[in-house]
Length: 370
Image (cartoon, rainbow, N blue to C red; front, side):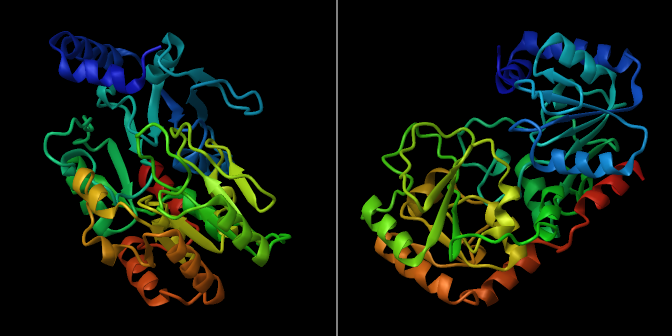
């Protein structure tokens, strides 16, 4: 089966594809819509902002028909599910008045009489779309310039960053906060056998395999294990769903989350977040807890991928470490002093998170459905 990106590239970049796309959109406009049908899709399946908006709407008990686009059928999920890029799934898309997505899928064949709610999957730190370095192939959003298209952001700065990335009208981007962050304010604190929880969430590199989870030059599993064991700490590892072949250490103090696991089930219980360039730290700022940035390749990454928010030093409110020894030292300090970098965190939080509450799903719902 062709991937959604492969199909989109064909419809955009070939003459035959553009003709076919025009025909599909015409057919889509002609086919009658179910006024109460909402089609949801996300990567991974049934997750991220679409899932949390769906959960909010489900609790309202109103007369909506929910259907989900998935890569595989989930037997423990009660709503109708249709496998991505199959005739039955495309038919359900044609029949849906509303589309809710985390990645902008189906935009190319969307008709203007369909309400498209693009919740995306995080606010941008890294460059993407029109802000990527010149010469890199990009897949840009199409069909985003009418009153039935909605995209969301977490602040004015993030709205403008998204508008620059996708070369679209910022007036079609609405400041609501992200539905997935509602859970950060509602998850009760659970008791744990450990003295603290560290979460490591590196960004997706698209480089095949890595020697280990850390690219820090003096990293050894033994040093990590000893540090965790001596202090009674839990080290959680959550890789990007597309990462493959990364060697992850094992041990009594290490827990590896499945790539498809919902990080928002555990994020509220994390004491220190460790990342490199993943924008999940924008969400974690809502908890006002320490963040460490492991960036041994910062100059190379900035040159080849670049950032939409610069300077990097300002927008990343936490220590930047380039060696494993530095990492352990900064982790020790962060655990002992939760106020470490607190002033910097508050500054960035105010810039990137206009709303700091559990009502983002409600705001999206009121925006689209009134």
